[in-house]
Length: 195
Ligand SMILES: Cc1cc2nc3c(=O)[nH]c(=O)nc-3n(C[C@H](O)[C@H](O)[C@H](O)COP(=O)(O)O)c2cc1C
Image 1 (cartoon, helix red, strand yellow):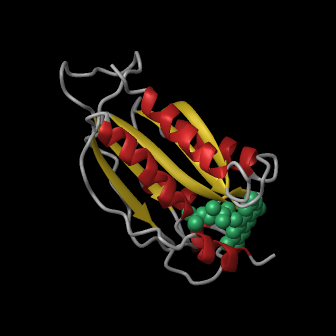
Image 2 (cartoon, helix red, strand yellow):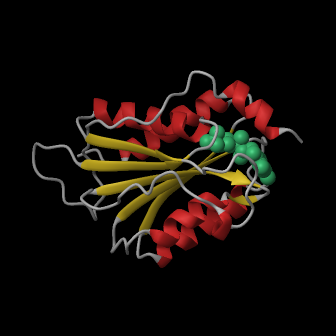
């Protein structure tokens, strides 16, 4: 199955991560400063751009709500498929400190979580009881084709770092309702931070 070719085509138009501003949020566990948005970090592992694109959509909505948002993208440096986290070399290690909430994004590789994200989480400091949401992208139309398993792993890894995972979502890239999925995800994640 040639995922790479499909992904490259589909990812056209996606761009490098940028850094901007924008947060504010409403989960009971969060301490929203009155009249101010929150500082929210969106950290994605994205090889071909799908996961980054979803991160960008979330960022747009959060910024529209007045939050200060930083979107950071990391990638594997290897060209081909790397199967084990230990063999992955990441181009960067986005920092997790100084945010009121974090959103992580990654993708499904070989019916489980991409090893680059595992490698990343292994290296970051403890997240304390940081408020976290996470999402995945996958090529197949159904979440049981790797998505659910990858999400369970992603949650376990983040919780082992002390994170409290509030929301999760999976985008099925070849699903005919992909756009709707992305819109709903962005809406849902953003609604968590409304005052
Ligand atoms: C080596 C490899 C293995 C993959 N395995 C799966 C899989 O098991 N299930 C699936 O739905 N998609 C699979 N995909 C597709 C990716 O999960 C999907 O294209 C994802 O959106 C890529 O995210 P990115 O563009 O942010 O890198 C695979 C892709 C590659 C390159």
